[in-house]
Length: 501
Image 1 (spheres, rainbow, N blue to C red):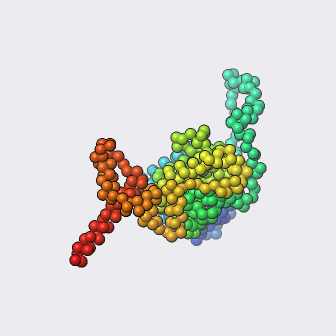
Image 2 (cartoon, rainbow, N blue to C red):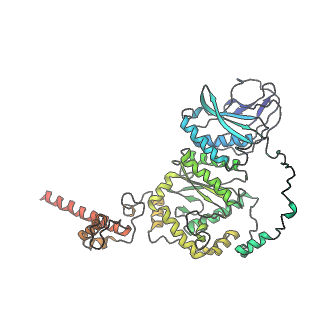
Image 3 (cartoon, rainbow, N blue to C red):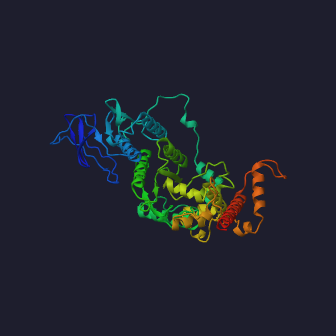
């Protein structure tokens, strides 16, 4: 995208898809600004903007800001974060104003308040947004039509080093010598017993994707940590393609921008064409999992904060990920963390409708508990060694045991046939599959009336053994339903015989 700077009016003209629109920059000084060179995504123009002091031949209204064609919340967020990353490269006092005419009906007070509240949460983890730059609603005739991003401190890297006056209570000579502290900590925590990573961040993107696909194929799919993944390239319900993409940015604002552009990709693609996305960020907080987790929390907040929960769900991976579920994840239960430990930081963008379908067959809690049992048998040392060596051949014959619920079979049947068999569905309101080792013969050959009486006794607190009201467990529920269905079928049959006689 090429724009021409007009030194007389202090404006930058841009050619945008089907005509000229205006990027309003308040400075009168001609210069060249190179915005981050990003890929052209889904027809949304992104790239370099060159500013010069030559006016256009066909001038436009001086009051027109940049116009963006966004018509969904995801597209709006992608445009806003691109705007925020751009203003970080501008001089102090310069600004960028963008309007969104296709979002006019959505820009009511509630929507704007929620969006700004979400952006305020993002400021807590950002590097320059909220400190050296800010974004505010842009009003036309009393209505919000867009947003203005403004720089308050100049481009990154130009900030002068802070200088402090002499402090008599600060004596650098008394700080002490901390040489070797890191080595001592590592030896105490056992870090040195693991092999080093030869090439932690390969320069070749293809190599990163190749290693990631190997991890997905052998660890997530073949071992069964994710029961809805089939190899490295297919996943979801119904099954569709897995899209792998890499962003080497280390800045938080840039990763926000890339994330939202990937959300747009998911939004605009069909489920078969793109089932799920793995956004790999090898240089983003690789050794700072706490910062990565804080960033991820803001993405999770956006699901409900700005109404994205019906479109997508998120799962995060990191080489040092630790579950915050109240379990002993630093001791005996540490192996469970490897269900989310990947070679590099990753953001997995899932479709909400597919997640909800999956949970009907296999509840999330059941998946985690079964994964934990299998990973504990492998052990932390083996799991960490494989992760560092980027080699998972040792688990070639290891499988997550889901036989107790036959969840893996239910998931795979659904992927292939597109439906869940009635016999695999639980009673209404329960997400557990009804494959609980209760066979129909066990009910048919038993006293069906007695099965019903026992179930009612527990639910009503009428059993002689215990007078309290208790819930039925999975097998008891299945047996009761099968018994009731059998009795009702028999009654219908008898009624039918009466009518024919």
